[in-house]
Length: 508
Image (tube, rainbow, N blue to C red; front, side, top):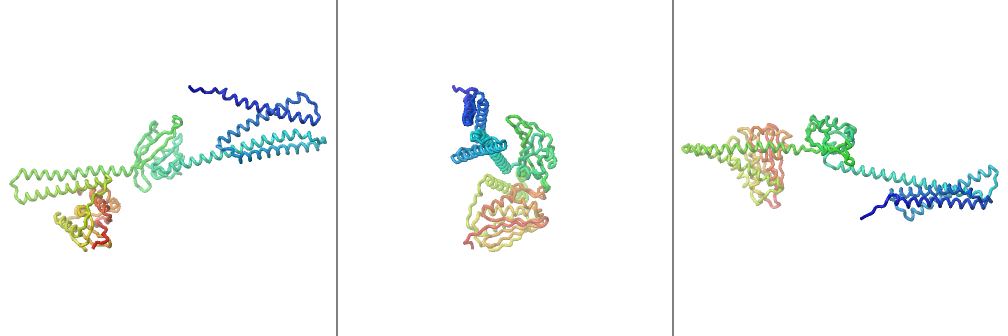
């Protein structure tokens, strides 16, 4: 079992040291007084040593206190007493001792000369002793104050470094952070919060937290800002920025505690979830659109199949028409599911599985011609191809799938009787396929998102089938081949898609 020392036992050595310092100071000054009296011929009386004993003891006690405080200051400043530093301190204290003695002796000499006292060497013993002691005490005091000043500067420097380090950490965090005082006035804001709220740090500091939120959102924030939830409260807000765009921000308030006591100050964390919100909206729209686009052909297939089974005496031409319709809808379903499976593979982090082999460009174009010939005749196709004997090292099925998606879009968004132009030619060390339509086209803002998953132009969502995956898949296929894809479009002037695939060095 471990025993702990009692406080008065621990303080006993300290009391003994202070008492020893008092006794030594008293003896030292009494000895010097005794020597002075002998040299000056003064009578030796016991009462004459009371004042030297008290003064010497008090001086020794005060010197001991100053030494202890000086040691404490040095320990707090984490300084070590090396040989050079010790010598410097000895020289400094010696200079203080000599300076004090010289100054007091000069004053004593001046007094004796002005008063006409006889100049005796013994008469300067006391000025030398007291002057030296006074200079030594003053030197220790000044040295201690200098140490304390240096320690304060070092502490302030460390605090500033810690403050700068803390601010650097806060500035490096991607989420916005806003720190308030006990009255919920803003004290600290990091760069991410400035960017999310679109308000400068100077405008936010010292302002109430509720006022800042009221200026950038129309959502109600009073209950959220003034919450007293112990574990912190979270809420999603829509922030209106200066450029007119809307950010979706998830905010959370966390109380600041001081030794498990709530101070009233809080930390507000802001996480920009705009992209996640947009993606969630796109996925919701995708589910709705996909359900419609999958259910419609299935309903048509089942309806026509039921009609064929119920009426076996239908004319041959009508049977052929129904079977063709069933085939087309089944092919559309297969095409849609194939796109979903391919994009699912990419979404899982797996590369597209390519089976590259040398082939002539004509082989791909021939399959495209057959595809165009099988499509409904409401659209005319015009081919303009060159260097069809060029050898490409590609996955022909994937290239056909990409061109099929582009042509499918061109047909869907073109007016009846429109023309879709398909051209192919060699351009330097690349071979290009270009599909140009005369459809509704797209705005510049829509064109920027043409390759995004689940994205569909606003002008086409209500009127045309599709789930917004075709062009995303096209880009994945082109990127997997190391090629480039370009999209050009203007409203009511059609769209142009250019696919460019690199050629081998030995391509002909």
